[in-house]
Amino acid sequence: ACTGDEHCLVGARQRCSEDNECVECLNDGHCTAETADFCIANSCEQCRDDDDCSAAAGTPLCDDATKTCIAECTSHGDCTDPTKAQCDSGNCVACDADAQCEGVQRDGKGAEVCDDGECWECTVQNETACEERVCVPATKVCSPDRLKADKSICEGCIADSECVALHRCVPMEFDGAQRESAYCLRIGAQGCSAPYLATPIVRQSVSGADAEEYCGINEADVSCEAVRALVAGDSCPGGVDQECAGDGGLCRTVNLGANLCTYACGSTLECPGFVCGSGYCGGPE
Image 1 (cartoon, rainbow, N blue to C red):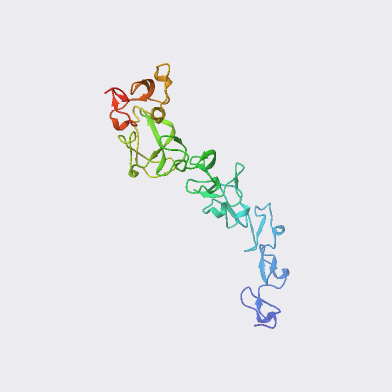
Image 2: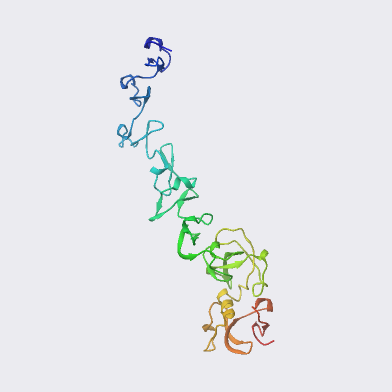
């Protein structure tokens, strides 16, 4: 307690307030430090508002909490760059939580999911912004036309969520070369059936699921398009292989039906309800 300044002689608190407490200042005139010119709540502070700070000095903002001049931000809302959405000690830095991305835009779209230090529209773990659509893993944006759980086995896909239950979107090959598309394949542990029974595929999914066994096809000789063509009963009126969809498609007599699309096989397990005869599904034994 004090009744006059003469009672406040220790440290920075050398002024006696109306409440009889020793404080740092009673008015701006008591603040003589170069970086603390303003008396705020009996303490010498650097700024009261942005007008007290200097853009020329690179610190144009006044932080309400600390009453110091800072460079870029006083809250996450001041940081709109998706690569620097977190406000940390007055500077915008990489995000580490989704809340810091609230209101952030990226390429004209909302980007409110933090992943690897940046704000994105979505991730394979968080597709909330996409609603019924899927998140494209490579770009972390919502696909304009790809729907969740819309593709079945051996249909082209861009993300695991596009496949029906118990399936994932898996990169595939043909004759040793990478296919442009990935395809929905059933998880092997869930049980496989012909024509996806004889040749399991072990691979990581496009959405990052750990490598495991999937019900597959013989990628050396046949593609998913060729398998689907046989299942659909596609014909090749001209009698040439090129009329059949997909790599590995063959135009043959299938179960006595002329000019139908099929593919090469090594066993009946590779054929969808056909025997493997004469080296192709549906051929004569």
